[in-house]
Amino acid sequence: MKKILYLITSSEYGGAQKYVHDLAVNLPPTDYQAIVAAGQGDGELFNQLANFPAVKTIKLFNLQRLPLPLTAWRCLKEIVKLLIQEKPEVLHLNSSVAEFLGSWAAKIYKKKTKANLKVIYTVHGWVFLEPGFGKSLIYLLVEKISAQWKDVFIVLSQHDLQIGLRKKISPKNKLVKIYNGLDIQSLYFLPKEQALKILPAQFQKNNLPIIGTIANFYASKGLAFLIKAMALIRKNFQFSEYSPIPCRKQSSASEASRSLFSIFNLLIIGDGPQRKNLENLIAKLKLNDCIFLAGRMPSAAQYLSAFDIFVLPSVKEGLPYVILEAMAAGAPIVATNVGGLPELIENGKSGLLVEPKNPIALASAIERLLNNPEQQKSLAENAKQQAGKFGLDQMLNQTYQLYN
Image 1 (spheres, rainbow, N blue to C red):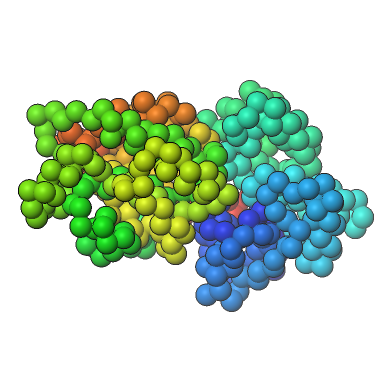
Image 2 (cartoon, helix red, strand yellow):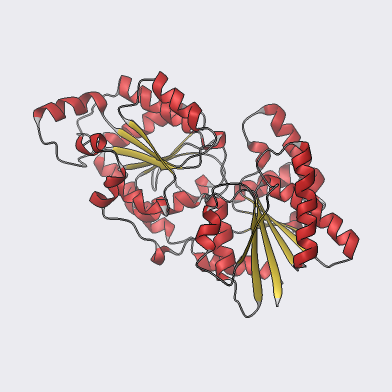
């Protein structure tokens, strides 16, 4: 039986963790043993894996985002010790800290033990594309140094494949494109009225369109740009001959009058290190009455039915699951033109794509949909059809072939 060790930096549950979860729980148990090791976080990844006793889980206490040098050194030794203990045939790395320290640890382990260990790294968006010029150069250098310790790079989009080649990260024969996939049939979305109960009472009563997103609160997710776009919409929104989204019937003239001022609710599901900064920005722009930060929610995708428009304002992406889920839910989508998103969304047909870091462009696209229910419907129907092309089985089979 072949051991596959999945290593990921954080134990919170985001797209990269869903990817690891899906690969680990679907491994044929007669041929493979799955081991998932993760670092700091809220432990939701471990909670999601608890129902799968065949998957062994291990917490690494020194593995964390942006570790100090001493912590990174301790983590390196912790991973080497784990490799010696588990003796996997394949080490499958996910996320930037885990991939650098994990591939370095694999190099040390192989030199010590002469073991035959295959090292695979899935690129969930190249880390050197993160905001910040100085950091980008350092990350690019680290990526190039550690590339020699890896056997295969899995990229999730043609976009990332081309960047890997252009930046000379790795030879072409080590780069493999495998799209993320969803088991569409197993997805469950709450009835709209039930999903709306996630909102505080005052939001439920104001009968306004709900613009929403699901994201971890990292700078790369671009949530500050979305909040700034909401301020622009509130200030400048102009109604066309179309009426706004008819999401819920207004019960009084006073509510209708208030809706002309407020225009929308923004619901953000998620949490993370940028939360305080986002709260301060919301307060500064006087948007507390129309923006709700819901925190992390288990099985967050089930609440997509609450959204009249789904927005992903990311600065950097790989091939995000949340967009596939929003497409499958039949939500009209506005997203940034980054990473693999143009490979999922055809601009103007299955969603609207705008340039990243641009609140004006985001606001314009959202206003366009607020004013055009027919376009919302058309985009949503086309997106739902497109989501069916990204199946889980295809992703699993292509990835498992690399383990042999």
